[in-house]
Image 1: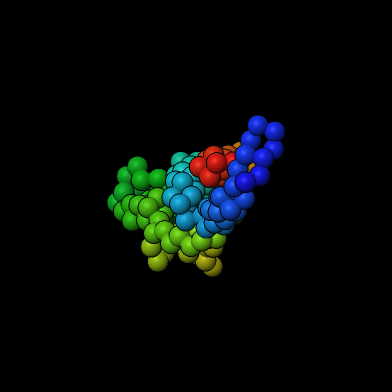
Image 2 (image 1 turned 30 degrees about the vertical axis):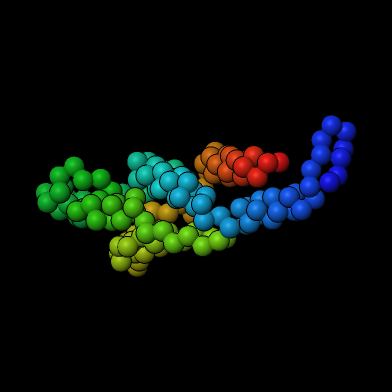
Length: 155
């Protein structure tokens, strides 16, 4: 037993708690669902602002396509025809690994909207640049997770 002032503790117990804390902050699988919610909110904002959230407002539809779409899907916003793409974007399939999270948008045509084609401008669904305020949301969530783990392991 080691004694410092009024505090005493076992070195073995401290080492065990440090190992637990190290595991908790290097294996982020428990945190990824929180991060997924934040990222999905970013994607929701991207749709709501027609791309302006990520700093690249989406180009308008070509006049001919806009007229046709207005007749077959009146009132449907940009990047929404039948809703498949938006539903897939807002419910990406997650894969949580210790140090990374992979979100897959299961809509094969998403890539064409993201990158554009010869005939269609890019309308990035996933922002190419995340605004600083949005990144701070994620940083705050990380801070909260780490602080919680520090408390949980008794430090």
